[in-house]
Length: 235
Image (cartoon, rainbow, N blue to C red; front, side, top):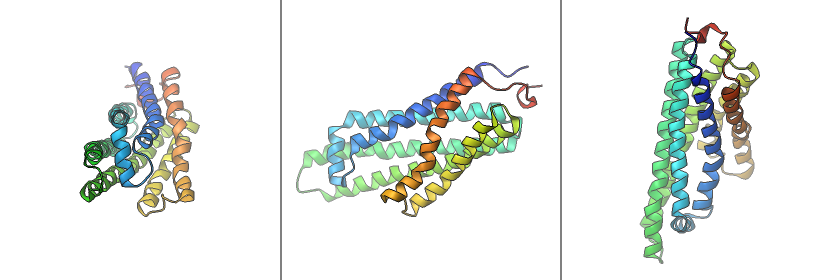
């Protein structure tokens, strides 16, 4: 039996969802929260509740997309090496969990922002402390979600490289750039991601990877997979 022809298209749409969500998520969150101190951030949150909730919805849709994409990749690649595919599956499912946790941290900022504006001056320190805590939960969880993404991604694209179901240059594009992301996370956790130059260096692999998901999505939808490889024929 040949591989279900709908699987590549579903995989392509999942990639496109990730691509679009990646373009929208960070700008929306920055617009809603701002870039000032915690006092200014809480005021901005109170003024942009709907925008921040939209950002949270996008992140939750992204987490769902990760799960769908992960399951489909496992279906496509597990015949090449089931153990590697299972490890990659586990890493990306953990990635989705941490993305949800980061969204919970963001969501917790909304009632804090509303209460902060209602209380007014002088600054209630407990709200600022809680705001810093929940913001930290978001940032840490988001960084860990990227870490597990960076651990699982190279495994998927290594399997794609072996099976030749997609052009090898696409496999290498994903493999190399995603493999750099755990290094980025470690630099961030060590405090090297905050200065301007350091932040640009840390973000370079992410920026170079961003169009990859769009390209992969379109490839899967319009080109599909090379079904001549024995790993996807189901025979």
